[in-house]
Length: 327
Image (cartoon, rainbow, N blue to C red; front, side, top):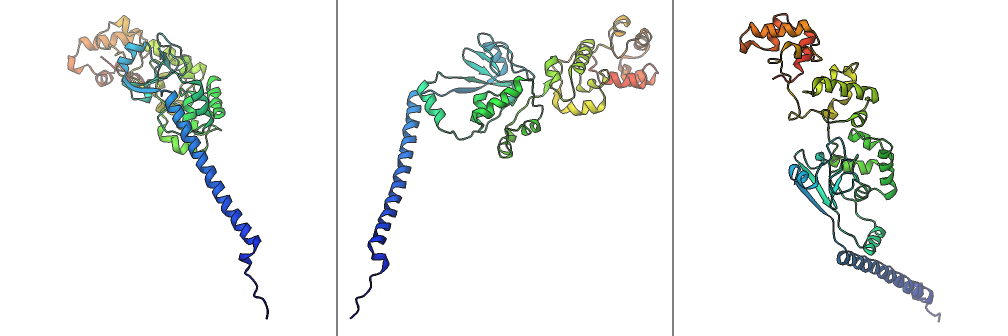
């Protein structure tokens, strides 16, 4: 009689393979459990030994009364009283971000806690989950760029670009940075907040950061602003020497004029010798004709349309003055 052959699954080799597979599964599970326990312990260390930073949304007037001068929308490097400047105004350990981040009437004030060195090292060793929050790529700190999901090297690359004079005028400029991937930009696009530039407060450096506006045009804009006293509307940039419609259209969505800062032109009250100094008049004859029109017409008829209809203003003069805020 033939002996019945045992199934291969019952052979010593097969049993050893099964035992090895089971041991491997338990080893993997044990490793994963150890990693989980380690991360939980690290989190506990951080929470016990460290204190979080604090961010407040504060009325701009209140923030200025406490921190002193705050950055305008065009400048993230104004020094606040009692503190150093690092991408914003600091005072007593607090950081005030430019106005566009929290709204025109408010600012974000961040108070950085004293972090334990050990907790910092542990935190840096664990890749953090990317965060999404409103930020201005022209002023956001290297640390906050890392919070947004950039590596330290990528964040420093963006910072180096800014330090060398680079400026992000639009969201699309930030998207074109070689360290910003399509995936990261898609996640952050709605959180990018680049404040508009107030052309009544902007200095030469801020104006030069606008596309197509180099040093020469920046100087012409400042010269025209000085002659006017202030811009009334951004369309007055079209009256800057040699600044044409194409160049204006390239920056019109990046600038604004605050009505609070606009100084009205006293067309209906200034004497002729003062009227003639205005850059849109610059003529004794025109200045005297305006005064003569005022003297011979009713107050309700004192309008630019009336001056044009009376032949006092040419079409070009009418167009220029219509861009002014007139008192």
